[in-house]
Each structure stands twice: as C-alpha cells, then as structure tokens.
Length: 148
Image (cartoon, rainbow, N blue to C red; front, side):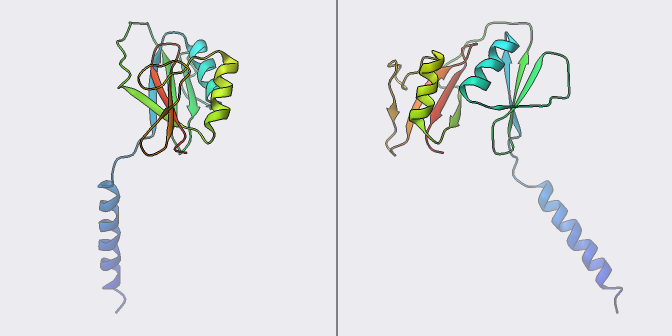
C-alpha cells in the first residue's frame, strides 16, 4: 500500500518546483557604471554608509556594496563615455532619519535639492514622505526619502 504514495510525492514535488520556476522575478543587484572607482566607492560608502562586500573579480574595476534587503550595488569602472542623465531616471534609497542623513550630507559638502531643483530644500510628497535628490560623482540622480 505504500507504493502509490511515492508517485504522489514525486508529482507534488515536481508541481512545487514548477511554482518556484514561475515565481515573480526579483532584483538582486544594481550596477552603476563609473569613471573613477575610488571616487565613486568613497561617495557611496561615506554618504550612504554602505558596507563593502567581497567581490569575485579582484580586477580593481569593481566594488560591491550591501545596500540592504539582500540586494547589492556593483560599482564598475570602465573606459568613460559621457552619459545623458535625466532626474526622472534615478535610484532611490530610504533612510530612517532624514535629518541625520542631511546633516551628514552637509558635513561632507554634498549638495541636495527637491524635485523642482531648489537647493537645500526637502520635498514633501502628498502622502507626507520627505524626499531629496543628490547626484553621485558621475551625475547619476539618487532620491533619498524617509519611507523607511
């Protein structure tokens, strides 16, 4: 009587595996193309206090950071070709305390602005979330908000 149980278990296992294959895609990392690896890695580690991860390439052209939620950011240096960057195309990081984050920006001399471009101004969304925008050393826009 135990033999019919084995095919049922195998069938159930295969069905469960199929569900995993069809699961929603998830983000694992973002890659940022930079002109100067040290300048950009210093920016991301000092401004966002991201922890550097061991990176497998060991070629001096990559730095990996843990940016939370099992997601990493890969900073990749390559021969630079200027890119056109629009504020609409940005990444966003949420912080637990906007005032502390802004104090760190000011200490580091990093300019910030609201969405319309008013310097040293915080934007408040209709839902009450505070947000600011900064540029990294290569001109990429980064939104910072307190939707932590």
